[in-house]
Image (cartoon, rainbow, N blue to C red; front, side, top):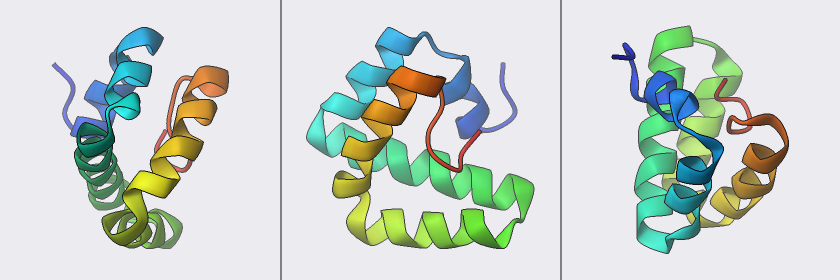
Length: 79
């Protein structure tokens, strides 16, 4: 099992990732969990800023992450 939620999300198949990001409320919860997990794990300032932004604007950023996941199999700044 992955050590963090971001690791768990990145280990899922691309179809599961996209489904999780397509459902609006689930999208926001997954965004928050993945971003804060990544920010705590890496302790990079840019990941912390992304986590704070997703907390308030997660649904909007989630739509961008759907496209990013289709291309690269992980969220923006959460690899």
